[in-house]
Image (cartoon, rainbow, N blue to C red; front, side, top):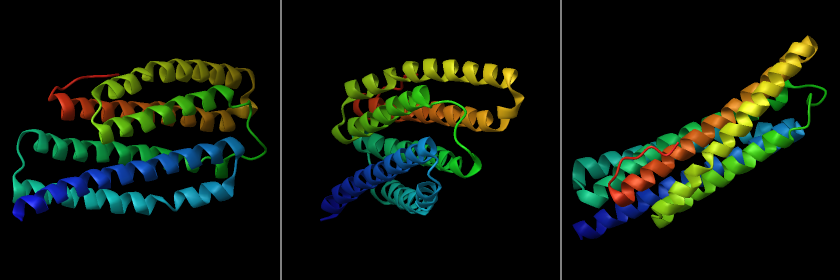
Amino acid sequence: MVRERYFQQLDLLKESVLSLGEISELIFHDSMEAVIDLDVELARKTLALESKVDKLEERIEISVFDLLALQQPMASDLRLVVSALKISADLKRIAGLSINIAKIPGKIEGGHIKPLIDTKRMADITADMLANSLKSFETRDPELARAAAARDEEVDKIFYAVWVELIEMMAKDTSIISKATYLLFLVRYLERIADHCCNICESVVYLTEAERVKLN
């Protein structure tokens, strides 16, 4: 009976991390849609989801501490507990950065200074990284984790290209500095979210192969 409860706790921990992943994906998706369309109402609804992230993270922390204190997991089970805690921290940061993105629409008036084609491409790649990093955790697939993390290079290339373009635009027209600055924040947030996806992938490799790696 004790061992049965132990495995139930491990399953619940994994489910809680995946639930946090789902809400983080939703916040990221809706924040990007809000900023691209400058949809203030969608942004407001997205900001209201932050409390759900806090509650899920708290649930995960309690589960981890209970397992460590009462069950003393060993080997692969211990790696699951440690990885769950690290992944939840990265998901919390992804959600937090997405919340920052959702704050941008309320600060930009009169439309964007340029089409956000490259920025949307950057966001699409990042969303794919996030989805596959979570899938790799769910299925314990280290190769999928490595493949997801490898796309960080694409994100970085777009980030630097957009960053340079915006700086040059501001140099030519100082009247756009305010709007351009928010777009600089946007691409920086996206770049950081992609980095946290890489961290999740590293945790998956540690979970499945007991190996510490750097994937970005």
